[in-house]
Length: 201
Image (cartoon, rainbow, N blue to C red; front, side):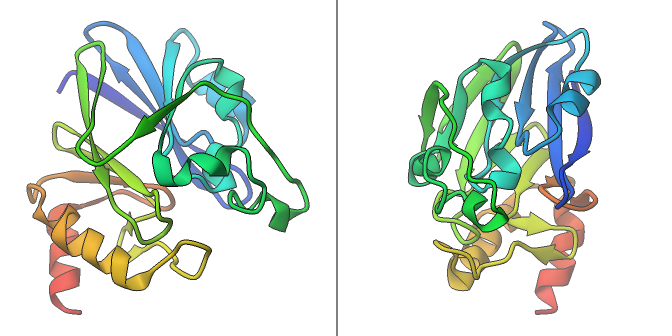
């Protein structure tokens, strides 16, 4: 595999931010820079960040988007989270935040190319209406849809337990069993491991 994945745990909610680098071209992107920009900057030292990918629009995943000065990719249903303090939930933390960024709108099945890296966008509503996962080679960046042994909360605006179950069972668990899952919070897992757990539900 010609990519390198670095995890940086950021913010009070311990969100997983990922720096993904193409080892052939040296190009890098950041997934969900939710806080602690200096920490992310230090972890990505010597690399040029070309793109920011958001798995969804909650503040603990988007807060530092504009610090990189590059295009931000987000699903159309969560686009307003970038500028609406109620939708991005920052108003709940008494620190309302809006972002001024160049935005690229995503939809299910889109392909994102950077260097030799090719990411497929999988729309997985349930945690939010615009939640997406990014799949490359045998790696899935699952945001707050699928966790190790669990799944994202569905009691926030736009959340739906029915939808997240459908997203996981009909999209994510159909991926190859050896797929590594890098979630938005907590430790990594595999599709094989999660299939066993979901089979017991």
